[in-house]
Image 1 (cartoon, helix red, strand yellow):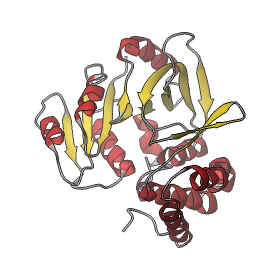
Image 2 (cartoon, helix red, strand yellow):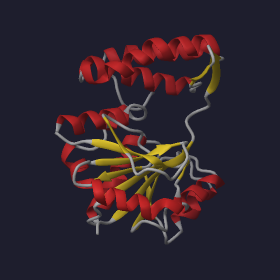
Image 3 (cartoon, helix red, strand yellow):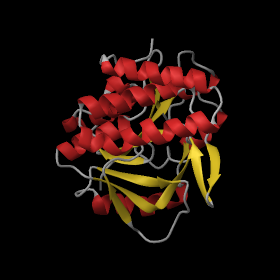
Image 4 (cartoon, helix red, strand yellow):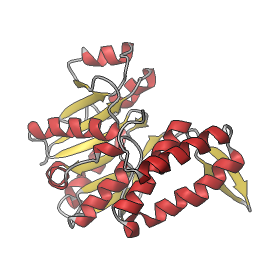
Length: 275
């Protein structure tokens, strides 16, 4: 049987994070938490002192890419086979862990990343869906394959790190899938529901700084890495998401200003943490 270690990135964690961590920490062989918080609160301190967790302090916010790389690097040093990458606001379907593990074992020779679905019902058919990339939370990542492609791109800091990793895997002949019938409870931003023509859509309602990173990274990856691979998400960001933000969200002027700044920095290849 293979070994699994979890890797969870923390940023100003609250009490709910402990509940989320406990939904999978007892299932895995090693549980790593990587703290990106600039100031450590009581939750961070409790995890630092908890012998059930390996606590890694990034000494400030170095971005989700660098934090995940650091955590997976630790798991690799302990000869762990798969990293379960988790966001701090994701709740794992603990009840189904044995079923999920069997499927990971079944497909681990064919896929370098086996992810979970999110915000759907659990149980049902053991169906997998092959995808070019997947969200970072709830992924069983083959550590050997991950190391061989160079891991996450630190310079992206946050946003599109999952897309860029998918690109590296595809470029190196590796594949990604997710388990359709096993799902995380996962929080994505502060979305605004849009009801139009009998259907429900969402404006993501990100903070201005997140819009900076999203548009900077989308522009950079499309123009400087691979236009074909990143084409769909690039145009979705630049056209669809921009329109939804301008029509349905508040603070449009500030957000649009940060979008322009992000694109400007991308054109200059100015990456990393926003200063």
